[in-house]
Length: 266
Image 1 (cartoon, rainbow, N blue to C red):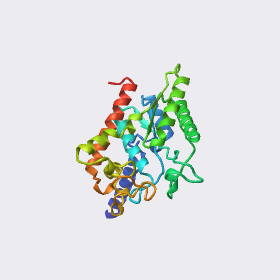
Image 2 (image 1 turned 180 degrees about the horizontal axis):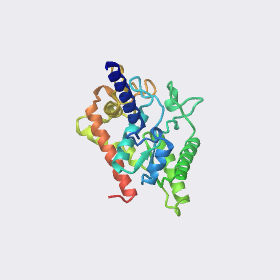
Image 3 (image 1 turned 45 degrees about the vertical axis):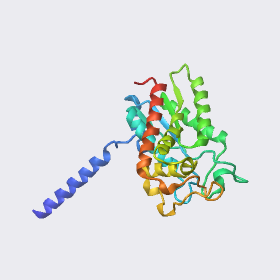
Image 4 (image 1 turned 180 degrees about the vertical axis):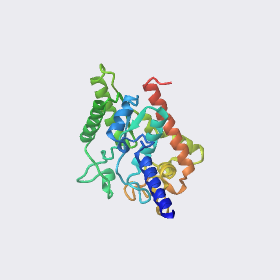
């Protein structure tokens, strides 16, 4: 009798596991879906796709090179779920970061990967063309890095003109990177622009502490010595996850409002 019960338990557990594994996951990320699930989602009205762009670059001794990817994936997921009919393409993490030989900009620091602007624009363009082919009608280009903004705007304008008679829109969501709104908040809390910095300082570090704190080496944080020395502009030592969450909310709301305006959504 005991053996029969044990065998029944094993069979039930295996069946339950198979049932759980067989379910469509609660995800908006394209790479976590099968092709049939994507096809079904499009047929059901999920015709908006977010194309996040990031960068693989130095972020001081205290933050990982994938900082932009973690931030933009978190933001893209939140936007997609708020829209309700959107999916998120895999983040494009190779972007223009400076000359390679001789190195300039972030390329002076180990691990940074840079591609020419024209290559980045081609990647964006053909990503959008692929997504259009599958049935997506609203393509949102959202970048979490400065060098991405101009190329995204150019590609969005080019493809929108080309597809203007087909009901396909490509939008550059530049308000995601209008970080001044977060800077204003930090100033209101007593910080100054020297502490906020332009790279890997108070602002940048706070955002990653809120989104992916496991990727911040808090024991390596110190006031920045400058972009030419340790790659840090600003003071990460006064960064907090609380600041970062407020900043993330401000940036998210700005981007979502721009999307709703561009897409004529209420």
